[in-house]
Amino acid sequence: MGSSSVEGGGLQSNVKVVERAILMGTRRRPCEVVVRLLGLFLTLVATIIVGVDKETKIISYAGINFKATAKWEYLSATVFLLVSNAIACSYAAASLVMLEMAKRRRNDNSDVLSTSVVEFGVTVMDLVMMGLLFSANGAAAAVGVIAQNGNSHIQWMKVCNVFDAYCRHMTAAFLLSFFASISFLFMVLFSLVKLHYYKFST
Image: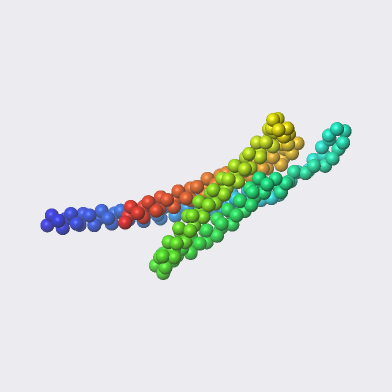
């Protein structure tokens, strides 16, 4: 009699654990979608800003006037920033579609194995996109500091005092890209938390 009551209590405890894991999963699902949409929006806007950023000025030097243009494709760091955000934006859109299809398959119990593989692959790619964006942001920040302040030790002159609008737009794109990388970091954290609850429920 005592053993049956203990077994019943253990069964109820396991059921509560599973129910709590399922409830947490359903609560996190809208958060995951919102964060993924946020990453899509931020990378899209950052890509557009970098792609259209261009400024032309008439510069006078030693009594000679000449036209100078600042554009994203003239620096490898800004090219890296644009390409990285374009890749991350495309991936964010594709991942939304893949996760929605995986969710429907899981609800239909049609192919649980392939659904798990898709979710694992998305988690790995989230991590890759996060690293790609952080590296691009670091390169852009390094070049931006030199453009803003120059470097007197190697005689690199600052250029943001001339191309001020160009630098402002690049700064805005950098901030958007930085927040996008944070959103991808949260995507990875959501996947780790979900994995923890699945392991805990089993």
